[in-house]
Structure formats: structure tokens, C-alpha cells
Image (cartoon, rainbow, N blue to C red; front, side, top):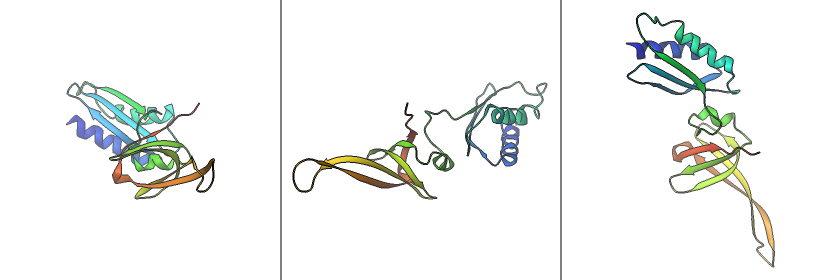
Length: 153
């Protein structure tokens, strides 16, 4: 079956390039293959070409008619893999959980959770005026519904 063969070729290519990892793999009934990858240091066009060739050059177009698309995860795409958080340390994320939405700087990531930090102006405990307070929250990966990097210009 074509899907099994493509999966094996994709796995072999990713084992050869351990800095790259799979975000999504889709294949429809018309044999349109779509592979979305990311990398610990980002993804270059050459990385997409490497994955594309690893698949395409090992399939026989006489046997199977297919189209192949290999792309990197877009800058506005939600983070779906734990490895994506590591490469986005010190960037601003907007994270949705089941109960809240938090925007802050990703200061730490572990096997189980992430830490976001941000500053907020709050009334002084005593007297008039406001004071800047640093807030921080740990969010377990299992609670994250969606996380996106906020692109600042």
C-alpha cells in the first residue's frame, strides 16, 4: 500500500536528519501526499527538498500516481510538538487552556509543562498609583488546547 511505503520512507528520512521532526502527514484518496515538518533550528527550503526527494525518488510513478507536497510549519501555525516549544524560548506565546487564555514570554519548557512570564500594572498595595508586577504561570502540556507564537513587528 502506498501510504505504508510513504510512511516508511518518511520515517527513514527523519531518522537520517534527527534535527527535523514531523508535524503532520496527510494523504487523501487521490494520493495527494502532504508532509509538514519543523526543525530544532527551523526549516530551510533544502530541508523540504531533502524530505521530498527521500520520498519521491523511492516511489515508482509507473506503479502509483501521486502528488507530493513538503512544507515547513508556518509561523502562524499552532505549536503541536513539544520540540517546537524549545526552539521558541524567550518568544511571546498566546496559550489557550480549557479555562483561560494567557499571553506571555516562554521562559522555560520541560518534559511536562511550560512556563510563561509577563508584566502587568496593578494598584499599589498601599497608597495611590500603580506598580509593575511580574507574573508567572506553569501550564502542563496536557492542559494546552492551542499555543501560537505572537509575531511582533
